Length: 201
Image (cartoon, rainbow, N blue to C red; front, side, top):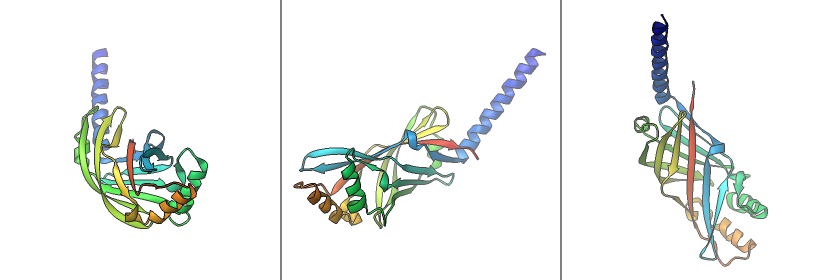
């Protein structure tokens, strides 16, 4: 009798696990902001590099493979408060352009084929909407399936954001003048480490 009960429990567990995997493959993934990072590097005085970040990012990977990442530009963090405020006002102009948005399509079949603990390299075409302008960008990604119905999406190469593509040159020049610097670079490398949790339906 005990063996029959044990067999029934094991069979039920297998069915539940199989069902979860099927649902997981077909469902959405939600960004976990507290475990994710988005950083960018500024270059001043020709050779002085500083790492900055945005602390408020939201994202999703839908069951159709649509990837969305929204960046609250007011959450810029450079470790210097007056510089944060200057970037918000003179560079990003957050009163008019509150967010930057990165969108792409990811092949979910490739994601689903990744075994737990394994990774896959992907190169995908994306679009960056920033400061009222949209530009195509290429994303070099490493996607890893983690324990606990999670995936990580990491930029294996930085995205190079060019100021003149998004009408940001005047804003950078204003920051340069306010800080009394000889130069601030017009090309900014951006990198990210994103954790997505499986979203139950």
